[in-house]
Length: 183
Ligand SMILES: C[S@@+](CC[C@H](N)C(=O)[O-])C[C@H]1O[C@@H](n2cnc3c(N)ncnc32)[C@H](O)[C@@H]1O
Image (cartoon, rainbow, N blue to C red; front, side, top):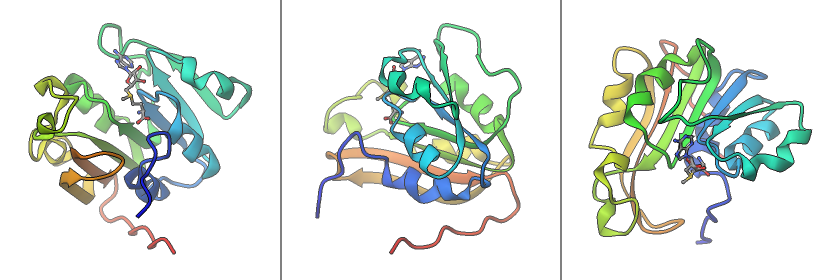
């Protein structure tokens, strides 16, 4: 089985981004090099990409469909006010105090897709700081009573490297159409 490269979109994000309403704006939080910003553009979404270091997004400045926001999400004010998004994507980043804001930022009919490291990962490498590792069920707790869970996993993966991850896809709707299996 081929190894997924770290600059390739997360298969989890790729699977559930399709639940974002067509043409809607997607938030890529702590976007890094923009692998999910780029994926969302190929899906026809406009994107707001936020990171403290936006150097990895430099080539996207020429794309009018990408709004790049340089912001310190931990030391500065929340940069997005009351804005709501068709999709909120977070991958490989955790700053717990933001979780309620991120859930609130999902527009009616929109999707919340989150994937990052979880407790147990310290056996395999970094991150090992508990501040950066989700507790069992933590993403479920974050959306409970607010969003409808479509899918949730917590466990060990082998690719792109051995790690313990937790991931969720949840929608602000009573029922979501499940994504079609990829061919
Ligand atoms: C492991 S990378 C993940 C990047 C991207 N989400 C991905 O999955 O490819 C973590 C990102 O969080 C960003 N980050 C770390 N601390 C931050 C902060 N205080 N405010 C905003 N972004 C931050 C880093 O600059 C980095 O791009």
